[in-house]
Amino acid sequence: MSGSGNLEKAIPLPSIRRYPSYLRAIKKLKASGEEWVSASLIAKELELSSILVRKDLACTGLEGRPKYGFEINPLISAIEHSLGWDNATDAILVGAGNLGSALAGYNGFSQYGLQITAVFDNDPVKIGQMIHEKPILSIDKMKDYLERTKIAMGVLTVSPQAAQKAAEQMVEAGIKGIWNFATTKLDLPSNVIVQRTDLSAGFAELSTRMR
Amino acid sequence: MSGSGNLEKAIPLPSIRRYPSYLRAIKKLKASGEEWVSASLIAKELELSSILVRKDLACTGLEGRPKYGFEINPLISAIEHSLGWDNATDAILVGAGNLGSALAGYNGFSQYGLQITAVFDNDPVKIGQMIHEKPILSIDKMKDYLERTKIAMGVLTVSPQAAQKAAEQMVEAGIKGIWNFATTKLDLPSNVIVQRTDLSAGFAELSTRMR
DNA sequence: TAGATTGTTAATCGATTAACAATC
DNA sequence: TAGATTGTTAATCGATTAACAATC
Image (spheres, rainbow over the protein chains, first blue to last red):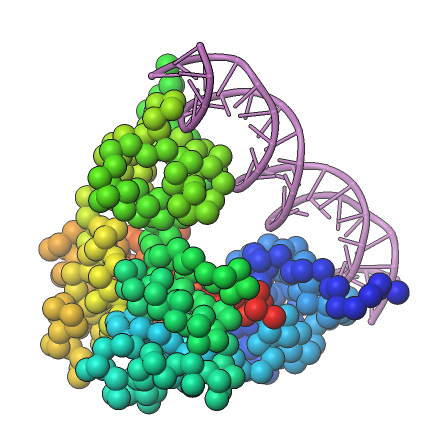
């Protein structure tokens, strides 16, 4: 009845951004022995409106059961599937500075199926060292490494000055999606997906709210 | 004419979040010798619609000059004032783990007037050490330190399990605004401002866009 | 059964975009 | 002057919230 192919309507980005917090709340309930969870319960846990959560969960395509809510395991799967987190995503990281080292060792990511397998830098002093059990490799080796591992996602944590060039090297080496922590706006082919996380935006919001 | 007191209409949060990127673009132009900047130019630089930038700049209260745009220096001041970045904000950081160490040493923040002056942790091994020229102090010392320095903002980078307790200790010690990098939802008195930055939201967005 | 929760359609709200007169 | 840019009012768009019948 649904026309042709995988034309599931796109899930709004605000919903997508809330999904990880839903997953955390649901997994916490699961850990405490629950097998069912309702939108209202998640909403209360996260201090969101229950209608909002209900709508967001509806976007996963999973059907709930009036009065009971959703069975926990299928719900986790459905959300993870919507996020593309079905199977762990391997990624490389470029830029072994402060932020890069932190993200390479940040345990929180593994919870979301993000696995950083190697770190690249062009500082001869760093190359060959390890960060949190991950090798630091020369940027020259990136293309080879990506071809061998089929990795397509990269985290970019170099300085703003170095960001554009590093990003070009990543794309050249085969990266298709970049999580950009540098403040620089990257100029790249349109088939490359760039997701910028700007830490200063959060600080701006906090500063303003505190005035 | 404007009624009573400081009732300037609140600036929308999406605009606030864009301000830091405007500042970067404007300062870059200033560094290249410009003295005037138009909304259209900033928009082109950041790939935003010019009407959006124009509206955002209007919220600062600064008046532009048709055909010329805005004088750069007053515009920088006006944006920084809107953000509460007039004078550098000192802050403490709680949690000397990976992410905490990175943020304590992240040079990018000083650009926005955020200065982390001390790091707190309760690990006896870490206490007494330095991270990027900042001392790691015992959490017991926090109250004293805040009273002496009048600092009211804190960055929270402990594990999710430790977050609620650490946040309570911060509030107890006098912190009024918390930038929370832990994934935990904090339960605190309503006069305390909590700004959460959830790194997994950005990753969720990237994963989905790459599918 | 009664009550809670779902799924869905309609109403509201706020942000972005469009249109346009004013002005340098 | 002509043209670019501002400030402002109106239109659009999308997300959130409200309302409510269906159902377990």
